[in-house]
Image (cartoon, rainbow, N blue to C red; front, side, top):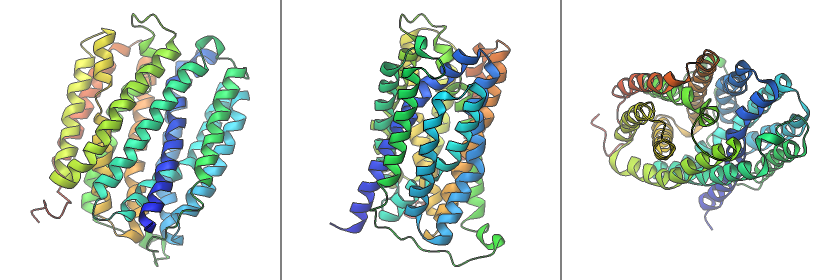
Length: 392
């Protein structure tokens, strides 16, 4: 079996396991922190601070992997350390949990390099490689969300309870397994011979990456204004289910649609170009958030939440940056765009926590639509990077 195929299989397995963790945590983490602290500010912190940690660390791990020429060792070692942190989380008070989550994310952010490895395995089909990787990620997130909804209820959300211990320890076990699964992977990207810090910070098409990074900040900023408080928002809708189960179902629903959309997004990027997919993502975000602000009907909210805009945005932006960088600098390029995504996520989470504490939750959707409009305008400045579609 050719090495790219074997390596890509390891990448898919690791992505699937990590995505199960994300699926487990997203529906219940905000509910758990609020249930144990009744503090909306801490709800914002538990979402925002890990993103802030990931802003520098996404780039740092990319830079380290470029310098030593081994993405495998970076992900396996850092991911294992991050996985072990999960085992202390069930026993931490809410503020301590925020700190542990900050530490955990600082290490597990190294897994953004899976996208770099995917594009290096199939340089002529980068969009498809990234899209199929996101597809597996969506599948893992759906499984995780359903697990979260069945493993814990709001009544179990107490520090050190059996359900809480099982939840976080499962996350830790999966993270360690994902990290160790990369050790047999055969992959050696081009190694950067630059040793000076200035040289390491100068790479790729800087203008093009600045535009994509701007979009990668604004669209997640819009999204996380909604994402970070959505499980709590669902509690106010007329849904006769436990809030944790409701959040798990909604998360799984969006993940399932993302499964089908991710492969389509990757193939659309390879066939029609990266730029049209990125622009379409901005338009779709405006429509989805605007429509959600005009309804409280659970069925309509579920349908709009399930629109897989995130898949098209992530696949197109990651693929564009991989086009703008050589192998020896791709870790930094993909790290940079992920830093922008995480900065947007942090800013959106903090803003959402402020709005929620002020009782302004009904305004979040229209604010998100307005920010998405800014992202759309920025995306219009992007140039096509697919050579067969580029005019320059």
